[in-house]
Image (cartoon, rainbow, N blue to C red):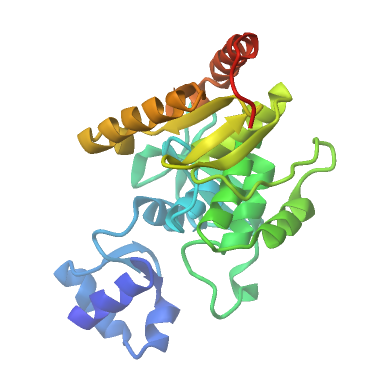
Length: 301
């Protein structure tokens, strides 16, 4: 039983019957694992360990695979600021879907009514999948392609640039993939190679919208790198609460701000939440800060 749990865990916490039979298990062993509670039967022919990711269990229960932003989260990449829905990819011929429809038209898997679902009808039929394809999530490239047609522009940038930051794709590869799936009806998007977080990618969209010249990851002697240097005058740092609320990081941030100000560069700190969820406010704060420093006698880099 321990080996069965270990194998399912290694496959991401969820596996289909075929994957387990290929690894030497028999139907009797799978049934015994379910009876003992070591594994759960999510759907006929699909099994999960009790701690399997919720998105995986929801998607498979519904009859599909985890896709789009949810799949990117499972790969450790940017999948949106809030994890409030499971994106599910289904083949167009999918049948026996275990879901219910809300009054507002939203979909919910029958066993997981508290979890909202966003459905994409673009997966290939099961029989046409690669033998190495996951039974519970689409590939990284498939997920990115779905994001390009589903998510807001800033989230698309954040998703693709997070794949570059993580070293999963090189910048030219990511740009080529984006160009192939990006709608020609929308303004072109040129990816940057300097975003260290999804919030920084959102900042890029704001700065581009303002028409401001900027450099990401600008280096200052004795200080290190900053998120963005705008018009060679203003430093912008984007802070996530989880990392920057720690006492040591809080103190380090203030020391850096003081050092930069001593060099003649004021610092505008914006929360990640503001940049992502209130881009209009962030744009206004940046514009006002730029207007102020333009009137001052500050050094030009």
